[in-house]
Image (cartoon, rainbow, N blue to C red; front, side, top):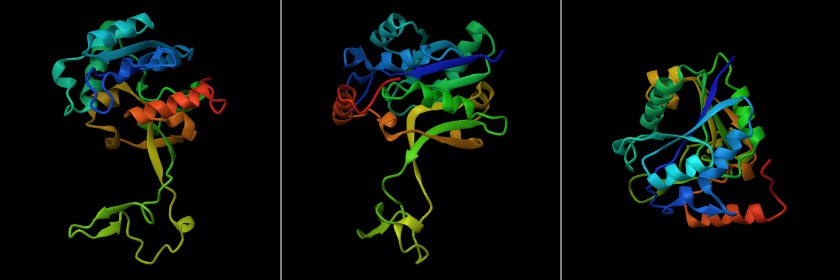
Length: 233
């Protein structure tokens, strides 16, 4: 039987919104939303929280997750989260043996729905190494995303070269979200990042994909949860 382990990676330090991972959203710590989502999915065998922070550890245990103590050097602003993924896989395998699917559910996406996560898991087929979640981009890199070309003047991120004269004609682009990442432990251990492999994407509703990094993001998520627009199931 396939074993699926879910992981939430939550550092104590956050410059954009200090203490965000345990900040209360509708009375529940932000971290708790991800743990609760994982626990609603029957096929997920275990839920882990990787952190270096004692307060986050306490919240994780209270919500029924197992804590992986992250080394301090893997919890800095400059540390690549992929290294924390590799560390978590190693610890999980040492404790509980091999497993089949690694699922990351970042704490910053509390409005994700159970169905969004299940869709990501189902999309991890034999010919794919990683599944990411995404929403259709609201800004086109061919028309209304710009960058400094180096001399103080701007240019579009992607050059149309006259090929596209209307936004509708340009290729569809997507924004990656933090709703879910699904892959396999072997890929995590033997690769340097997501884009080393064959990646596919699952489109999720925009409202599911609210990513909390600042106080404005937090207040927006709170607004949606107090309205009739969004449900958490």
